[in-house]
Image 1 (tube, helix red, strand yellow):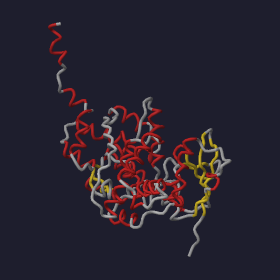
Image 2: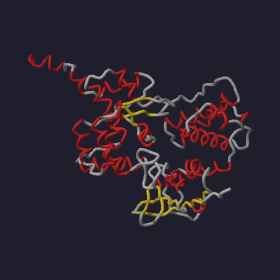
Image 3: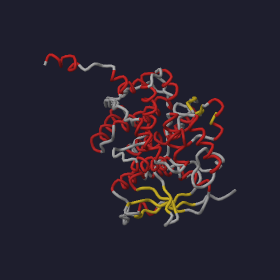
Length: 379
């Protein structure tokens, strides 16, 4: 059997930023896994991959890479090491997770219920934190009051976000209710209300300006496809050449959010560019591949090409790839497309999720007469 390769994690500075270097011998499988980390980049000068210290999460890194490699992260845990930033050190407080075993049946039940890899990583990390907090008490004997006090401490002392609070509650409830089969419990710490911010959208003119700045045909196809098909970044990254149904002007999105397949639009104009792109790059496994053949394009690279194009287009506000998806939905609505069709194209389970775009559609707002205009002649 082939021995596992070793990846050495080294904190350092690069281009005036605190980073974590990932040092290992060339291995296509390792590269494929490493590129899934948030904002991971290749340094041509240092000849290795690196991640901004602010984005580094030891638990996520271990969950992703330890199945395929040995991780050497001794230098991260050294008491004399001063390279990682404070935000970096906040991640390292979870080092207990490496030695904390999961409750019996927890991981198996998550997999049986087909939870996504991201959810499994989140839940297993949070349940280990919970066990560590009560390391002197058997988990089966932890009371509801203990749990409420634990959650309250996380909120008051550690200032966890509302989203994290909900995820930690769910991770704990999953063990007691799904693994042990106990009756459902409501914990006394109020769950935070979901933030209901409106989606940020680009105008059609801004979309045109951004795409025009993409001189590289690959970059142009990536941004054009996210916008014209209403894709999430993960959906674009997971596309394969066979998912482009050129005869029907459609794209099939396989096993997207909620483990559902769906069809979305393929612009005939984009199809012409895709054919040009294909002749030049000849992707083998994924429609858009990274520097190494057969590796997926990274999410951080998509963000980078969008920011570069937006800056060249003179757009000063903060732009994200997801804004292209929001803009796709909003522009369809403004063109008179039925909300139910937009729902299907986006892969929303409910029209209530899609209805949020009615709040940002200028077409919908233009139908409303301002009460001041009705009174103006009398003023």
